[in-house]
Every structure is written in structure tokens, then in C-alpha cells.
Length: 75
Image 1 (cartoon, rainbow, N blue to C red):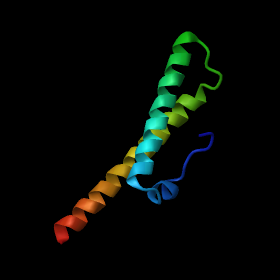
Image 2: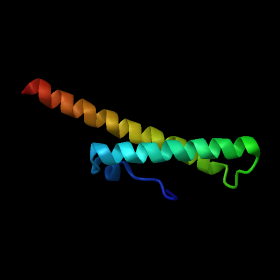
Image 3: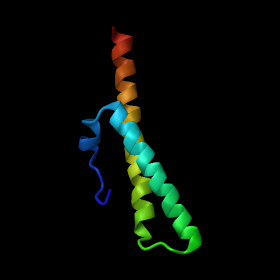
């Protein structure tokens, strides 16, 4: 993922797609952390971008769960 995903694009995805994307970002974060420890990082700013992308994704997931719970409570 070279470009940050907009929250509106994330909201359009299903829960499975969000889970897959989160897993991919976590793997990338691990690899970047490992590269930093070894001293091989090419783009130090990518660590920050991935961390923020994970936070953005988790925020959208939480909002989706909250919306589903609220709809279930009204029913």
C-alpha cells in the first residue's frame, strides 16, 4: 500500500476485507520494524504511515461494530 486509504473507501469494504487489510498492514509493520532494527530501512516515514493506516482501519471497524450493535438494540 503506497497510498493511504481514505476512510470513505474503508467504510465501503466488508468486514472480511477490513480484516484482511489489517492483517496485511500488521505484517508490513512487523517487517518494517525488523528492517529498522537491522538498519535496512529505506523509508523511515513508511513506519508512521502504516501505524496511522492501522489506526484508521481499526477506527472504521469499531464504528461499524457500534452501528451494527445500535441497529440490533433498536430491533
